[in-house]
Image (cartoon, rainbow, N blue to C red; front, side):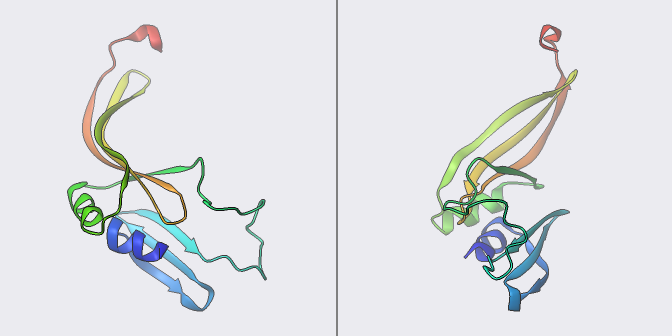
Length: 129
């Protein structure tokens, strides 16, 4: 289910996989994600109790050239957005970087913040630096 979400709706492609272990390495314009089904015989990556939803408190920012095709696929699949598309500006020292962003939750509860860059501008309120 997660693999279909990440590939069919978000637009990642499988760079390589190991179906026999439930592992897939995904790529979208240089952003890479590894998906792996839980294997109770090998819990080397488990750092604590696993309780659904697994992704609480995490959001992954993924840059994409444009949000429109992703929005269209999500809408067609009836996948609800966690946060509707919006314009946001974030300060980095004396510059603000703009992005159009949306948030969507994957089947495991991880929030994906998908962004499209819209430019940068000088930050004018230097009292907040």
